[in-house]
Image (cartoon, rainbow, N blue to C red; front, side, top):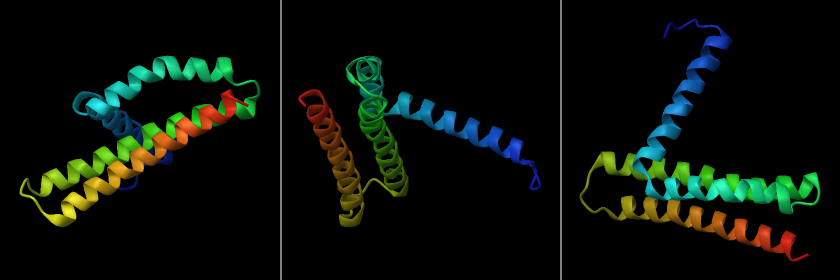
Length: 119
């Protein structure tokens, strides 16, 4: 890519890189594949069960947060694995912290859905 590319060219390339990232996540990350499968049900249910636009946004947003953090966690894990396969305390901590972030997103998702649906 040339250094002085136009904003539209940059947007085009950024979009292609993002799609490549989604494709890689789907190909290599089982958790992401499971979450994409779950999305087939969760996204329509968010529109069905959300009584207002705000509720729909909250239900969808809580799920999108899970997907986004899963992608970030997968990126952390890939970078750590690229460095080396031998055990290192900091590598383990980085992976555990990424996993904890996904866990908290899942709790946020469950809490958001429970509060909205049981209200």
